[in-house]
Image 1 (tube, helix red, strand yellow):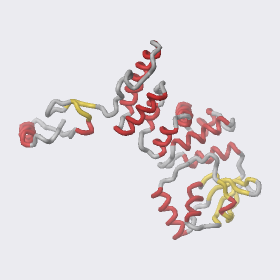
Image 2 (cartoon, one colour):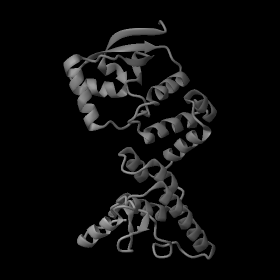
Image 3 (cartoon, one colour):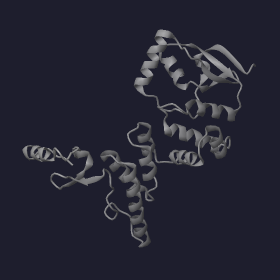
Image 4 (tube, helix red, strand yellow):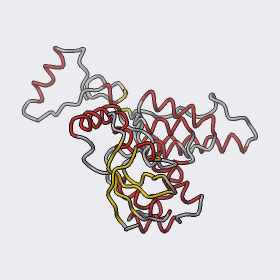
Length: 266
């Protein structure tokens, strides 16, 4: 077989990667692609490699799903001759700069290749142009509790917040505080402060031989708070209105506040 071949293949002979680099496809994104394929056909061939009498997707997993939903049963593919290591690297490089990358699927993919001893951490750093800490972070994401991974996949919480909260050393406290953060919102800075204070309290409780409970660890800091310049109340910054006040119109601003006591300004 030549290094590169382009041919039409029955869609039933194509196999998805296991595990996939992208395990989650946005509904709107998929709908647009399906509509495009219905109107114009599949314009960009999938990259595949031969596996016995079938083909394994190297790049184009989303296009495969969209082509099936669009009613296509024979689609163009580029057949490449690749070994396992080359296949994994090519998949990750194709996924590297996409804005909608799912960090959990990506992390699980990298972790699986390292566990299977196909690619080392140093090789991932070299081929992806990433630091060792980036790869280590992906391995941590791959080992996170499922509830954290689900939130990351659906983009309902920031990755930096998850990385901090995952370091809480008591599992029950970690889960409880994570869902508090999910409901109330949290910055990475607040997550860092909370993780440090919570772990310090947990270590002190455990050193005394006591059980860690909801009542003996500090409250997690979700949204940062500040003092309102108008009424002096300490409140979450998300419920405050920020205004810029110049020296020349300071008196005018004070008059407006006096006339609108229900408004909150900081």
